[in-house]
Amino acid sequence: MEPQSSVLKKFSLHNRSIVITGAGRGLGLSFARALAELGANIIAIDVHDKPDEEFHDLLSYGVKTVYYKCDVRDPATLKATIGEAANKFGSINGCIAAAAIMTDKPFMEHTVDDMNASFAVNVNGMLSTVQICAEHMIKQKSGGTVICISSTAGHKAVFPQTATAYVCSKHAVLGLVRQAAAELAQHNIRVNSISPGPFLTKMLRSVIAGDPALEEYFSEGNAMKRLAVPEELDGAVGYLMSDASSFVTGNNFNIDGGSGCH
Ligand SMILES: NC(=O)c1ccc[n+]([C@@H]2O[C@H](COP(=O)([O-])OP(=O)(O)OC[C@H]3O[C@@H](n4cnc5c(N)ncnc54)[C@H](O)[C@@H]3O)[C@@H](O)[C@H]2O)c1
Image (cartoon, rainbow, N blue to C red; front, side, top):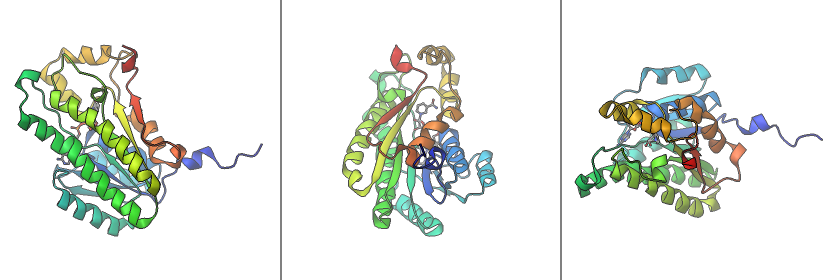
């Protein structure tokens, strides 16, 4: 039987322009590499002045890239930045909201300010990012795809790590995704989340540096009994960002080595 269309073609992101927040380093930068390899133009946003060196390697995929220093907590500047990128690249077809911060403090010491600080980036910054990108997709009548980054910490506590504000914010991401998916489906915009387990990035290294015993906790907390490398998320972001997942929305993907088995 002749296939109706090639499976591989469904993963192509040629001529799509994708906004990635938190793309200056870590998982966000790794997502940019994976999507550039699939042909996407990359609009990278982060609070750092400059991205890590590897950002410049993206050009080897023959795609267009741009890096903006921008704080996702500032909706007006974020809107102007994404608007400038849309003019430059012609459209906004996808977005990954990965910018986040983590506060390490026992539950009893968490203040309302700590909660607000985490929610300002991890939830409100995500809300602005998704809204602004979706505005472009709606105006373009093009549809689009959104991936929000939650965490294993969006599904359960992380004890003996102490990160109440982070845990609450990552739980909130799941609600944001479900509601956005329900309301944006009419515009053919799909919204899903990925919940990574422990991936070796600067964020995780700094958590482990603060308490080396946590390395064992992280690797023992999943069925595969190890930490992961960022490239192990390539398949999930490529799938969710592309037409390969055309009937998938409002869902969460745990890429966590089986953390739920415990
Ligand atoms: N590394 C892991 O094991 C792991 C596990 C689960 C979830 N995650 C999630 O994956 C995402 C990336 O994590 P990572 O490990 O690469 O962390 P990271 O700290 O290396 O990267 C986060 C990026 O977000 C940026 N950022 C922070 N505040 C910002 C703001 N106000 N505006 C714009 N950018 C801002 C940071 O500058 C940084 O480059 C985060 O959402 C994190 O919660 C990571």
